[in-house]
Image (cartoon, rainbow, N blue to C red; front, side, top):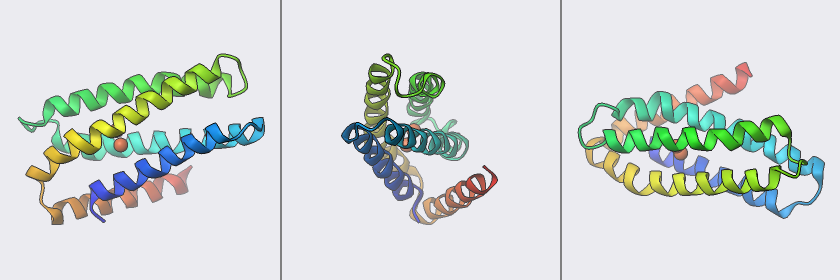
Length: 146
Ligand SMILES: [Fe+2]
Ligand SMILES: [Fe+2]
């Protein structure tokens, strides 16, 4: 699978978890969904940072985009980490959750427009497919090791 299609499908599933979370009122259910969000986001960030971002960090036309993407990950990791510490039932957690959601949704939009468009210009499909296979294998490996 094309790496960009693979990442897009991950984005869709992550966005789905955010709406599941907002549609449930049960605390234990919220906790379960949040754990899913955290696991998937951490893995997604890892795959992007170590495979995709790394591949383009020295590209003249793309390196500023990569820098911004790394920065957005760092920003999203703050409420993500904090929520992991305090749990989802704390009074602080609702605003942290909204902060996380906003930064993730904006980041996804940025990746799927500016970033992916720039990548398509410099990386042909066979190479994107090779990268997609690498990401899928790495994801599987990390899930099995967890
Ligand atoms: Fe990202
Ligand atoms: Fe992403």
